[in-house]
Amino acid sequence: MELRAVKGMNDILPEEIGRWHRLETTFRRVVELYGYREVRTPIVEPTQLFVRSIGEATDVVEKEMYSFRRHDDDLTLRPEGTAGAARAYLEHKVHAREPVSRWYYLGPMFRGERPARGRYRQFYQAGAELYGEAGPLCDAEMIDMLARFLQQLGLHQVEVLINSLGGPTTRQRYRQALVDFFTPRADQLSDDSRRRLEKNPLRILDSKAASDQALCAEAPSILDVLDDDDQAHFDGLRRYLDVPKTPYRVDPRLVRGLDYYTRTLFELRGTGGELGAQNALGGGGRYDHMIRELGGPDTPCIGFALGLERLLLAMEPEPIAQAGWVYVAPLGEAAQREALRLATELREAGIEARVDGRGQKLNRMLPRASSSGARFCVILGDGELERGIVALKDLATHTQEEPARDRLLPRLRELLGEDAR
Ligand code: HAM
Image 1: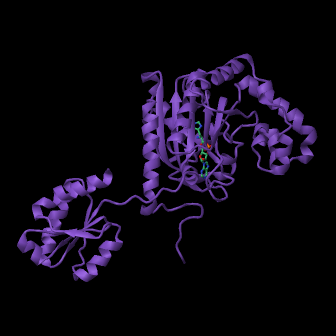
Image 2: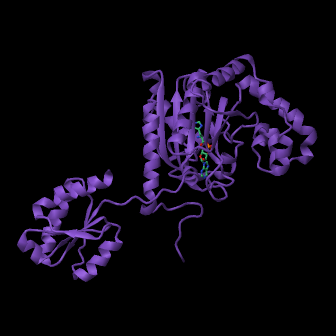
Image 3: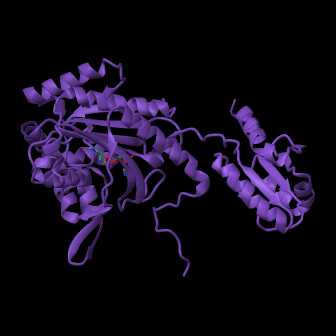
């Protein structure tokens, strides 16, 4: 049997990891400037956590969870990060220690969706959650933080969509409006949506089926049934978004696939790059009732998550940077020992060095050095050892010089410094 990675789960090889690191570093830098600190929670959580927070009648819980039983516990690989973070926030009684908490996370999530370009069964998210603030100011600030992060990545073709889902009374009213609208048109709905009409009519607005989408375009708008407090929150959000001039579009049909949202909802859609149909780069919203429903005190929350694979698809491929590392090529045993010393010295000075330990002739080593991607090759043979020098080859310019052994480090620093300029 041929062993392969699980369908929809990808390897990230060392040659690709540079882009991931740059993306993750930029994310950390941006969100930390806004006061967010990293949290790491387990990848496996009790299944009930997701059922209760994400909602029973969602695609994620109904069809996509990787659930299993072990040691009498029902467990699930996390399909997203919000529920686990909320559980940790509650379990460690963070609310009793600090009035406002700002957390972020990076890591793999698991959903058994049909794999496609930009849609995988294991994928990576970068997300953030803010606990303890109820007003629209922090909603606007979070959306602005996201827009700035995407700008820093060089992603300019991104649309910010916002909507409000209201609170429980608005939602109840809207639910009824949707039932009234869809019931006489039920025969035009897909099977899934007809089922949802009874269980969770809001989810119909999420449907990808073309016939459903045509109907949804005519369905009532939630923005017409917001109660006064929800309306004030939404108006506030729009006013605050105008301060940093974050461009956005109101989309009253935006509902997103998870049931925990209240009031502010947003999504970032890419319009360029190689994204194709999976163009939701990230999204989030307010979920003011989750902590209470999980057994904690009333705690307003808002958060988002971004799909890292999708961000990478939307970003320009980067030119491969000229690596500044040194290939050390020793000829003979004495030279090999000296090579180990020399490589250690270079590394201690912060210069990457790799020793060729295959100990063959120079005419075999040089081609290996050239094709290795190194910038410099240091050749050490008996002759060099005797004279107290090394042969230093610049593999980019094809020039060679023979600095004294103890001048090698300053000379390399000079050459690498010139490169950096
Ligand atoms: P979500 O919209 O389900 O929200 O996922 C956020 C992002 O994760 C999506 O916009 C997409 O970029 C990426 N994503 C989702 N599923 C896949 C997949 N199968 N393959 C590749 N990428 C995917 C959440 O997860 C919420 N927890 C966001 C949040 C945080 N809301 C409040 N706080």
